[in-house]
Image (cartoon, rainbow, N blue to C red; front, side, top):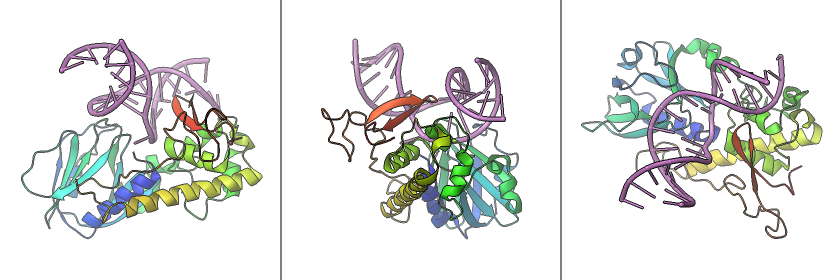
Length: 279
DNA sequence: CAAGAATCCTGTCAGC
DNA sequence: TGCTGACAGGATTCTT
């Protein structure tokens, strides 16, 4: 379920488990996800101390002493599992296992294999090819209505597609785009270039609020960001429109007075929205 | 050049 | 129960 809030929560879980710790053992079980793991990954990790973490868009950067950062992307189905180290079977689809000197095991699992792992010099993280083209962080103060309007100006794709474009604003995925557009009262089909002025003000505010609330829900629903089953960072969340086709939205009476939340397909992805309140 | 479609891969779930 | 097809939260690459 990894969009920005989930990635943020996973990162905080990794932080709690790994920051300041030395990696005693690193094992690569399968080295070909979306792209090949970098050569020497396990060797680079073994014996390294984890000095810190950073999130950029949906990417997690784990910084090691010695000047390298490990770049993680969870793709569609990536997860992190944590538990006590020791003898255990490697779970199906666990591609990378880390063991710390103080006895923790962290596994990167990705059945669908759309995720990726890479190494990048910490001093040049933002120059990495996967990060270089990203738009602003939506929760940064620098992400303003003026910045969003400028990025959308002249674009003739639907606003839904423009917000999924990580170069417009970084970290939103299908769910949070649907949610933010609903809250802002903007139709996902509206041409991106027409989102300006008051609409942009509203949209920026709702993007920030939607993400902030989801991150808070993620943190509060987990003790130290780890579930009892050892999974980091995923949590249940009540969406207002996502996955709610045919239900009444909170601003409408619902059927039969109003058709309720409808589902359409845009750029091959499901979009959920309310025809009555989103314009 | 921009926008949309196709694509990678596996798991899950609804329907028959 | 078993099979089949639709669908899935992403991002890149190929077509139009």
